[in-house]
Image (tube, rainbow, N blue to C red; front, side):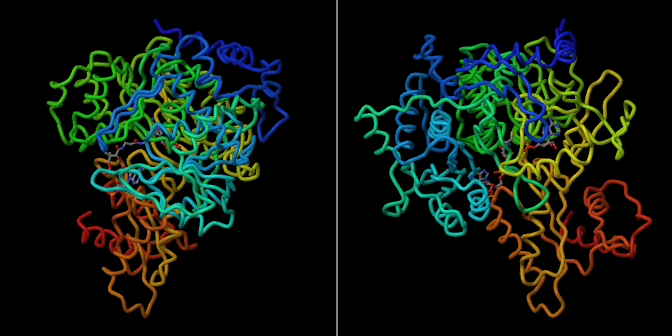
Length: 632
Ligand code: COA
Ligand code: AMP
């Protein structure tokens, strides 16, 4: 029997008592007397009078409590043939030394530090070092281009950047330093210093007086016996900023506080994921995404568990058995990944023959999130692994599961296609445009009654206005998730897609509006539209339509090639923008709105009808023909 209903009921009855109780799992410097203050911030703040240090909770207290020799981080990198285990004591040692180096460079509480690093333990060490001294880290994913990095630098105004010489993609070394140098050149707010972790796969050109070698600095600090102590911060002080796609080319700086974040993640480790301290929890994501922040970097260590930093892919590094090998080798009890990873494995090895080579007997649960988990993939994963496959739905903004199946409270019956039920903290409702609740079974906008629980974004970085505008104004009293879906008669949620221009490509969140800005910047382009079209592997892939300016002498094919290169160059390879199609005109309503929804239906082969408001219906046939000419 699951205790979910009782626990959710407890939260509903008295949210402050619920979170006050959950807060006891955290070591505070000043424990909270007040649990929630509705007068602060755009919708209120959690634990307003408490003080704490996140790094202390991640490392020091576990070392003090006897976990010093337990593995904290397991690094497994098939792309470099490296395996390394770091105990809690070792990580604490490295973090304290790096934090002292940061302090020597003048980084203080509240200063921002950009972390531009791939899946190596030093990325986590850098993040913990910032947390230790109260600096605010902002991690930028390695698959973004220099311009995206520059936008984040301009918004966060970092004092310093932590980086490395390269990331490694299968068959390709991604040199980070030239991208960073270009980003700093493009940005108006120049960081004073750069600390670079040199990897043997690429050499970095260092700028004297600005760039410093990570390993030498840390070694020297250790030799000199320098160690930074944990700096006291307010529970409401920011721990990090994580930029995520918004509806324009300017990403949103999602802020995470220290106190609420620790309380929420610690609660989830036991109750949602069913993990015990000392066990190995593997999240096969990237430190550049929210899943990486919450469940590679912070959640497992807050809970005294072991995390795996996997620098590889589900397939091709070297084969579709990679995930099973890692589970066997490190006795992982849970795996958390995006459905696209399982679609990739299934495509490569439909009969899961690689599973016969390995034992995954330690695995208790597979968790999926980041995009819709299609029932087919879920059923396949259940069949081959023989463990429950738990889909759960959340966003960068929330930092942890809004809707899930709480394994630790006792698993509820799984319905394929549904991430199950709201977690305590979330009153999830389906509403129409007028914010009126809709009956079960009817599709509408998914909203969350305010206040959001601990761990969710209190605001956007130095932009309360955009926070209110983006999330709080359309449905007064609620947070707008910008997802659409419905509830069934058992209260199970079904998440069907976004209501804005965000698309989800291989579990990566991307803005089509941002891509349109890039397309429009090409000198030959008069107008454009980018839509996400169905993709068997990645869920969706972007597809751009362009109308050329009259008098353009370049061939359409040439422009299309240039546009594909431009998106890669301006947004980055992660945009996976490969399809550009030149058309004579775009379908529009009589008021001039581009009919992206209808274009998407045509591309996806879904049923579609000509909208009554269309200016010229013939254009839809032109779009269908243009797609056909590209084999879509
Ligand atoms: N640094 C630099 N480039 C990166 C990168 C990184 N950290 N991550 C991805 N890229 C590049 C890829 O190399 C690829 O480049 P290419 O166009 O030259 O091939 C491009 O960005 C697109 O990457 P992706 O969409 O990931 O496709 P893929 O073909 O490389 O891999 C999967 C497909 C399904 C195997 C892969 O997407 C995957 O493992 N997904 C898991 C999803 C995930 O972890 N989501 C995070 C949220 S939970
Ligand atoms: P991100 O902020 O990158 O985590 O992306 C969040 C978005 O991904 C959500 O708003 C959803 O559109 C989508 N998403 C995440 N998890 C799920 C899920 N389990 N089911 C359906 N969509 C999901």
